[in-house]
Length: 452
Image (cartoon, rainbow, N blue to C red; front, side, top):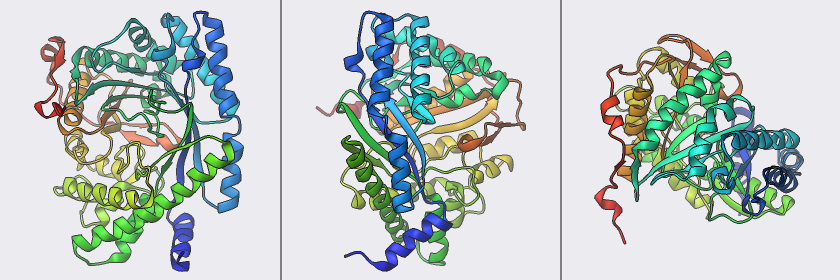
């Protein structure tokens, strides 16, 4: 039985607390687009994407009008191009990225993901060509997003790939230097990447997925923060229950939208990603949630414990609301996309080291962090290696989206606009890990990966 009070509370979440559907993402397989002829391959992927997702934007608009639920982003994720690109060289992959960009423009979506590679145990010639093309592809397109998976708990860490990604990030920053090095905001390095993630920049259509699928990413930091403030002076156990109940309601909204989109588009429903995804808007911040729990400022001692509790309660509430929860699911801590994180970083309370500790208990990793533009590639590699090792050792997804903002130094700010927000340039330790990174090879998988 539906409780009228719950309906009214959900309406208030939408109107007053920034509750929205952050993204409806259509995943599309490109395996049937493979061709030895480059022109035919590019035509095939353009036709497949624009045909499959032709009604995505109008259907989402209809759902918004019918239910009064804002759907902020409409997106597409495709099979990683390195798996279907065949004999394409670097220039061919750049042309493929431009084809994805044209398809996204034709559909009216804001991002398209899948310009990526899975190289956690080694790379093929196709993957090597695509990775080298990433800086140029991101510089010459507007909507294309790229991800590279360099590690899994089962395989260990491919340090050769980590070393290469440091250079790729630096090149991408330089080639987009006239726009705040924004190309790096569309590039993420993963460990244990999920194959059904609807959020960018890491979304792609995994090899175990159907021909096409609808994945929905919900949000609602503002709703959770408001619920905590209404709860007042209660115990942490009681607070966890408040968060669980709120996450349940938020996820139910996502489940409704997912099923409606699936039915109207004629595409199977995949998963609901119940992540708390913040925005730069005031009152839509994960940092604010942590501060509502009793921290003076996000980044203070106790932050990791508060985030661990938040993440766990969100997952427990969400899985009761949907039988198909997937993607990343939990709490995001992107600096530039969260007004509270920005404030804490500007105060000097929130450091990269503290963010790294927080990633051990949350959903993603070091996300949307601007660092000085003159940061050495080896230092970036060291940051990636540290973060990826947390994911591998703990059997969880972690990721790095660093932005070495060209021409910027610590204390400066880089403004990306829109959902990407603005980022205070944060310091990194300048001491070099170059010799360690240069050893290459693979860091072996942890012993607890041997579960067969």
